[in-house]
Length: 213
Ligand code: MN
Image (cartoon, rainbow, N blue to C red):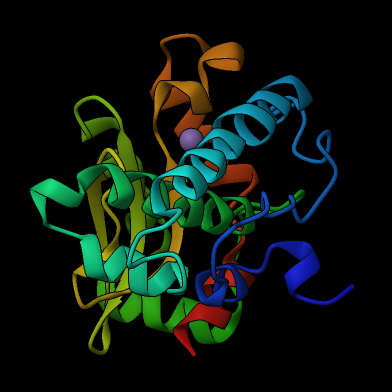
């Protein structure tokens, strides 16, 4: 299976319209019971798919019709009159990036090279995880918690709605979706429990290491 067929986020960024729904890199039940197959079915099959379809409609016949997704995101970010295109383009990519940020049997000890970088930036893996949880619970309303690389330092940031680090000059390493649709079927209003479970059991540290480049 090549990267494109697995919905690899860097391949997704380089794709041009019209977009297909980037596939999940695992089966819908792969993250159960932390994230149920029912949640993934709605989140990927309905929410992610809807961003793809809306973006295709929005860019048809515009100057963005032959641009890569990355060019669309960075070209429309921060412009009020382009907010609809930005929001849908960013959400297409954010979700692909999120699926890859998780894996069955994830969490635990990061690979050595990443662990060393985390310890240099946060003192400990535990402290980094606490910051991720705090960013996720602290994001008022919808948004995302991110582990990013800023220069040579790792940081945790949170972003509202569709905003992402591609427009901020920092390199995203992994993300957690904290929109209600990400957890409501499994956790109802308990976002903190969702974050605990995802961080402990699903975080794909190997993906974060790949993104450090
Ligand atoms: Mn989502």
